[in-house]
Amino acid sequence: MGIKKEPKQASYFWPGFHKQTIILTILSQTIAPILFGVLIISFGNFTINSTTFWIIIGLTFIINSIFGILNNSHSIKPTKDLMAVINHISGQQSKLVVPELNTKRNERTGFRDALQIIYRATITKEPSKKYQDTKSTNLASSVLAKSLDITTCGFVTLDKDHKIIYSNKSAPVHTNSEGLKELDLIFNVDETLESWLDNCDKNAVRAEHTWVRVPNSLPNQEDRRFFDLFVSYEKGAIAETVLILIDRTNIYSVDEENLDFLSFAAHELRGPITVIRGYLDVLEEELADTFKDDQHELFRRLIVSSNRLASYVDNILNTSRYDRRHLKVHLVEDTVSNVYDVISDDMMLRASSQNRLLSTHFPSSLPTIAVDKSSMSEVFSNLIDNAIKYSNEGSSIEITASVAGDFVEISFQDHGIGMPESVVGNLFQKFYRSHRSRETVAGTGIGLYISKAIVESHGGTISVRSEDGKGSTFIVSLPIYSTVADKLREGDNSNENLISEGKGWIKNHSMFRG
Amino acid sequence: MAIKTILCIEDDRFIGEMYVRSLKKAGYDVDWMVDGNDGLVAARNKQYDVILLDVMLPEIKGTDILESLRGGSEDLIPNSHVIILTNFEQDDESRIAMQKNADAYLIKAEITPKKLISVIQQLKDV
Image (cartoon, rainbow over all chains, first blue to last red; front, side, top):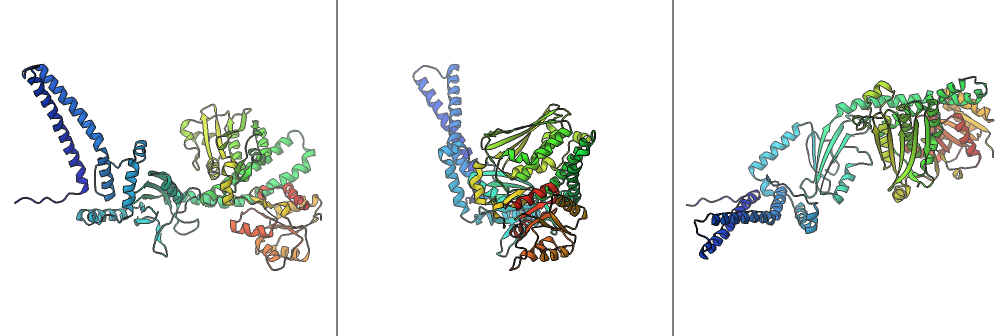
C-alpha cells in the first residue's frame, strides 16, 4: 500500500523547484561532453586512454555546467520572486526575500507592474483562511498576541485605507462611536502620520519613519503620555503599515513639567520686562543730555540686557508653544531685509556694546520670501546672539543672503571659536549645551531648538558649517514666495486687514472706523 | 478728528504710570483706571478717543469689558479706538473675537511707550 503524500504548502515549492532545476541543468550538461567524446573518438582524433581527451571532456563539462547554472539562475529568477511574493502574502514562513519592486530593471521590464497586480489582487480579498486555520498558525498567532499584550510597547497595524486592523493593549488607541479604532496621538500639523502615509501611497513601495515625543493628549489633560514612534510601510502587504510605540513618558514628562513652570515664569517675567524696557525708553529720552563720560555706554548696556532678557523669554514661550503643538506661523510675502529691520537696531546695539562688527548684505535683486516676520526675526536674533557669544572681541559677523534653487539662503557667519563635529550633530536638540559652552557661555539650550522649529514651520531648513577654532556659519533656507504663493492662498494664511506688530496686530489703517 | 483723550485701564501700577507719564508728555489728556469695573463705568460715561485695555484684570477681564461696550446690539463707544494690551497671548479663538471689536492687539513686553505713541498716532491719521 502506497503512502499518501500530504499536499504541500506554497513555501515548499521553491526549495524543491530550485533543487530540481539545478539537477536537470547538470544532467543536461553531462550529455553534451559524452556525445562530444563519442564523436571525437569515432573520428579517431583521440583514444580513450589519451590524457588530452579527458582534459577536453572535463573542461567541456565544467564550462557547460557553469554557463548552464548561470543561465538557469537568470531564467528562474522571476519564478523565485513570484514565489517570494506569494509566500509573503500568504504569511507562510519562507527564507525567500521579498523582491525590491522599485528597481529600474523591474520598472523597465514590466515585472514591477506584474508584482503590483498580484499585491492589489490579493489586498482586495480576505486573507487566506486556509493557513489561518492550521493549528500551528493559530497557536503562533495566539502566542504572539499574548506576548504583544504583555509588552509595554504599543503595537498597531493599519490596512491600505489607514484603518487599524490590530492594536495591542499598550497602544494608545480608542474605539469611536462607529466602532472603529482610532489612534490617540497628536502630531505636529506639518508632519502627521496621515500625511506621511498619503505620501507613501503616492510615492513609495517601502518606507520607514520615526517620530519622537508624540503626546496622546493635550497639555493639562489627565494621563498625558509621550511616545517615540517607529513606522514601517510596505505597499500591498496585508498589514500595510506597522507602528511600534515606545512609551517615554517618564523621560519627556520631566521636560514637560519644566516647560510648564518655565512658561508660567516667562509670562510672569514679561511684566517686569515691560516696566524695565519702558522706563529705559522714557529715561533715555529724558536724561540723554545729562549723561556724563561713560554713562551713555552704561545706559546702552542696560537697554541691550533688557532686550536680551526679552528675547530669552520669547524663546521659552515659543518652545513651550511648539512642544504643545501651539506654535503657529502666519506666512506672508516679505523681504529678508524687512525681517532683519525688526531687530536691526537692537542687534547693532548688542554687537557694538560687545565690540563685534556686524555687517549685512542683502542684494536688492533677492526675491521675496514666505515668512512670519515676527517669528523669523526671533530666529535671526538667536543666530546673531550666538555669533556674538561664540566669537572673540573685535571680530566680525557677516549676514548675507543669496538664492539657491527655490529658496533664499541667509547665512550668519562668525569667525569665533567654532565647534568640533561631535557637537554639531546635537546642536538643535532641546536643552543641549556642549561641555565647552556650559563652562564658558551662559545660555538655556533652547535658542537653536526653537529656531529650527520656526524655520521648519516655514517649510525651510537650518544647517550649520563649523570648524573648531575657526568659526561657524548657520544657514537658514526659506522658500521663495512665488514658489509657495498658490499653496498659501489656498490655506488663506494671510489677513490683509491686519498689520502684524510683533506677536500682536494693528488693523489696517484703511479699515479703521473714523 | 485728532486724538486727544485716552482712557488707560491697567491694574499694574508701574506699567500704568509709565504709559500715563509718556502719553501726558506727548500731549494727550489721559485718565487712568486701576480697577476694571471703574474703567467700564468711565468708558460708558465719557467718550474717549482711545481706550487702552489690559486683559488680565482682577474681577472683570479686559475682554469682558470690551464685550460689554461693543458686544451688544448697540456700540456704546462708537467714537473710540480700542487698543488691547497684554502679556498673556490669547488663543486663536479669542484673538479672532477681539479683531471684531478692537483696533490693535499688542504685547506689552514687545512695545515701549514710544512705540505705543506711534501706534496711537497711526490711528490719528485715519
